[in-house]
Length: 308
Image (cartoon, rainbow, N blue to C red; front, side):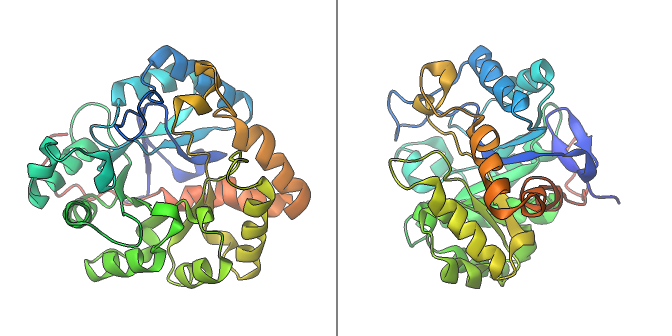
């Protein structure tokens, strides 16, 4: 079976991915961000078009279950703009779900079946599984979600995309997933630049996991130079072939279509050219094209019994 990347319009060869924004959101609704949610398809199309105009060919949307996830909306965006979109299934970290949320009552097996159906069932299919960890720990709901994600990964082969809270616990997450049966090469760790420690992330990268950074444009927290320095340091440690970049534009106040900024296109329109000037086009080609084509590819395993 040849490897594929699963987009909302169907499976493609990894070589067709092209320049890729590895972490975004076109829809996101959570009680943690009251007043900063976004779920309008027309505005999503408007925002996605700016990403295409800035040179992106593909975007990976990390919005999981019950937080505004809209596969049909992603399909409409893809059809309207030509942007290839990879959708997520899965669940986020504990804090996004109220105590009485129905997902909390699901067993790990039930969650896994739901993830597999999103990946292999009829309709718009997902190409990654999103899970999340809390700050320096896995809470019980997260442990259940991890177990469900592992089962779904083993049945489908799709990569696991993991939220790390403030860039913590990366190696611990990789080791936990490895004990459950997931090879580090199928694990993508997000937000690592929120803890810009090249030594710590170098140790994590030595496992073979993917190191995903998504801090460009967040000047109120750190300048872009901090992200660039971390990229440089990790590349110097031999990890250039494991680096991914995204914008993680997860608030309406970050979207120009909603009157905010810096916009979905910031990584491609502003950060990528600076990276190329300061660190070179070869590294940019790895981070935006070659690495995503490997990180988001998988060998389909049609053994789940889900309808096709």
